[in-house]
Each structure stands twice: as C-alpha cells, then as structure tokens.
Image 1 (cartoon, rainbow, N blue to C red):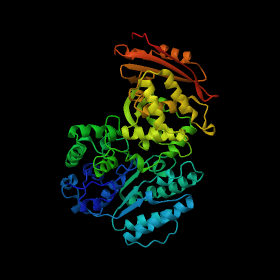
Image 2: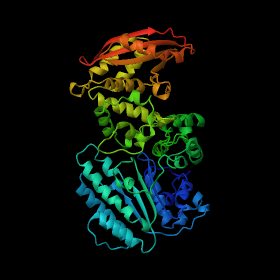
Image 3: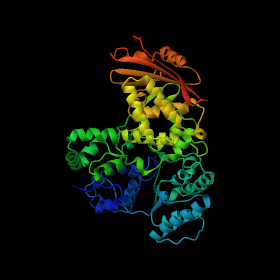
Image 4: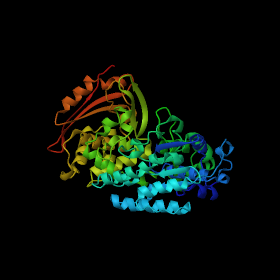
Length: 520
C-alpha cells in the first residue's frame, strides 16, 4: 500500500519516494502537445497547484523515467529538454514593493545559476528579461509561475498593496515582451486580479480556470478516490468499524463538493483526503486549518455582506472573471479562495450566465461558520450558544429560541455593532447553519422567493428577519411571497416565524410565530 502524503510538493520526490500519485498527466499532455502555449489557472490554496508546476518542470526537463506507468508515458510526446524558469512566488515574503523587488531578484538569480547563466542586470524586471533571452539561446524557454498573486494576497487591506501590485505588473509584463523566446508558460494563483499585466497585456493568454475540460485537473473525482485509495479506504473503514460504503458516504459529505465549471463533476479537496488517511480515518477540518480567512471576515463586515442573501441569489459570471485589489468584494473572493463553490448555473437571455453558490462540503461549511461567528462574537462561545439554540427549536420552545438569539446578540461588543440588517442576518443565519438547521442555501428558488425553510422533524419553520420594522411586517412578507406553498403537499406542519431586530437595543424586540394555512 503506497504512502499518502500532503507534505511533498515536488513530483520527483513524490515518485522516487513511492508515494501515492493520482495520475493527472493526461490533462498536462493536452496542454503541452501544441508547439506553444501560455495558460493561466486559478484554484484555492492547497489544491495541487505546486505539484502540477513541479510535474510540468520534470516533463520539460525530459525526465521520462519519472513517468513510467503514467498516462503521458503512452502518449505521443517528444520528451525534449528545455530551459525551465520556475518562479515560486509563494516564497516571496514581503511587506512593501522594495522588499518584493529584492526577493524576486534573488529567485531570478537562483534560476540563472541552475541554468548556468550569468546575469548583469540589477533590477528584477530587467534581470528576468535577460534570463529569458540568454536561456533561449539554447532552446525556447519554459516559464512556470506558481502562486503569482501570493504577494498581493498577503497584503490585502494594507496601504502597501497598490505598490506591490504595480511591482508585479511591471515584472510580469516581461512575459509579453519576450514571447518569441518561449515554448510554454503556465501561471497559477488563487485569484484573478485586474490591473496585473499578465491579464491586461498578454492577449494570447488562455485562461482555463473555468474550462470544463480541465475542471477536474485539480482535486479528486469520486472514481479517482475509490480506485487510487482503495486499500486506504478499506483500512480506514476497518479502523472506524464501519462498512466501506458508509465510510465513502461520510467522506463525500465532508470533503467532496468543489465544482469549477457548472456542468463538471465535483471533486474532493486533495489535502483533506491525504490528511484523513494519514490520521487513520479521523474526520477533521484539515484544509480549513491550513489557512486563516480573517481578511474575508473583515471584508464581509466592511461591506455589510449578507450571507443568506448571497447563498440564495444568483450572481453573474462576470463577477468572477477579474477583480481589483482596490475594490475587493467578498463573494468573488470567497469563491476563488475555495470557501464557496458553484452549486448550480442558470442562463438568462438578457443577463447571460449566472451561478448559485454554496459551501462545497461539511468541512468548509462548519469550520467557516464557526470562525465567522467567533469573529462577529469575540466575547462569546458560539458553539455552546448555538447548541442551546438548536435545543429550543427542536423542543418547540419559541420563547426560549428568541431568548437564545438575544443572548447571542448581547455578546456583540458595542464597538463592533453594525446597524445593518445584513449584520443580523449573518449572525442568525450562520448560527442556525452551524447546528444543521438552515438549508435555504442548498435549495435556490428561481421564482425570486427566498426559501428560508428550516426543517425540524415534522415541522418546517419559515423565518423572515427584519431590522427596525415589526414581526407582523415579516409575517406578511412570508405570506405575500407565498413561501409556504412549496411545503403544502409535504404533510409537515409549517410555522411562519417573523422576527424584528431593534438596532438601538441590539436585541429582538418583536417576534411572532403562527401556523400556516397555505394550501399551495
């Protein structure tokens, strides 16, 4: 049984160390089979981008022996060796443009030494140009850039980010001016920022981020999981004393669900799968713990971001094409960083394609919700509070339910209080999701009526939350938009629940629950 690892990112080390490798070389062959190509692909962190870059490097260095038994080994390819310039921007730690320039100059010099080239230029931009031109005297150059946007992401929200972006813009612009010297260029990152020259100037760049042919190039499909990890699945099932199929079903709920094109198959997060097996089949938030989404929480509060609305309303595809570091919006950034994914796509003849988004799986949904509540409620214990919230609703204790919501709201420090309806929506919505109560984001309503249904046993609660209005106003909206019609044939009891938040008191000051008589 081959060893599973999430800590080895170099293809050669992975193969020579006899670690398990899920064969993705057929995708790579499609990219490199043409005489020239320049590609960009974004994926969330820890999704195999560095390993793919390393795999491309081994191919272009002609190390065919590493690919014995893999798909590309049986395909038509010449296995010629080319000069490879490999820039791992994930290692470029900096807090200003000057530090970034110095750091890039160092990595350019390292590449030059590996290729036996002496550089005379001092500035990183000019040294990069010199390196490419001198290396191409031997053969057309391959340029591999990993995590191109890491210096930007590390400094989002800081005054220095604009100057850092400009430094990168000038540096990446060299790729355009040296195009005749190139055989192949592959650029990866997490986000696609505007005003960075690889997008504004490279008119021959092909963005395959949401291309259906490459949607499963990163991450594991269900078939890949069950075939490549067959022995590990059997071993983990035995250790957990469950059937193999039951274990697979649990893994699908925890770690599957990422969709990178609307019609594509969903994939598993690779680091979560590897860590799951490495830890003897223990379910945990492995991917989420590898990075903090703190900047996303700050943006959410800054823009009064309403998660309930975001997860129940479609968003146009243009929102995900590019965005600027000076005008960041939470939703596109949440999708590109992997906290949200495509759940469904719809087409409008006037507006074009649009997507419904949602959390990809239980790991992300539960961990993100808990961290978000902790950020909104730094002086409370969200887990204990929401457990009590769940208990009151399941017992039908409506008064106790409201009291628990008020307890949560009371834990908001005055200095963090925001008088905006979306702020209250986010807190209550996330609290209910955390204990598995809310399913509205999973069931978009195309008629425009937001389904705020929470199923508790044989009872369905339809919630409407308002700010500085009244419970009656909320109830009337539920009735007018006929939210209950969907459940008229379910045989379940439907309760309309109107809640009003008082922004001055920072509490619920009015609520009303009544049984629906809707017949559809």
